[in-house]
Image (cartoon, rainbow, N blue to C red; front, side, top):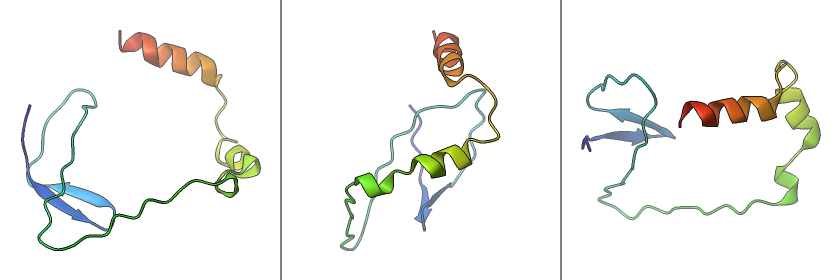
Length: 77
């Protein structure tokens, strides 16, 4: 495990140092705050989901999603 500090600002985390990795790695983020920070827990509603919006976002993807998921999982074995 590597421990590193950084800054969180407006939804982005900037680390103090760069790490060279060959593939994505899992991380654990701990917020150290000097002041009271409110964490908003937004609940999802059916209004948050849109079939039409999903179709629009995926219109340029021409692969079989099931096959892509299976292939990705096999590559991690």
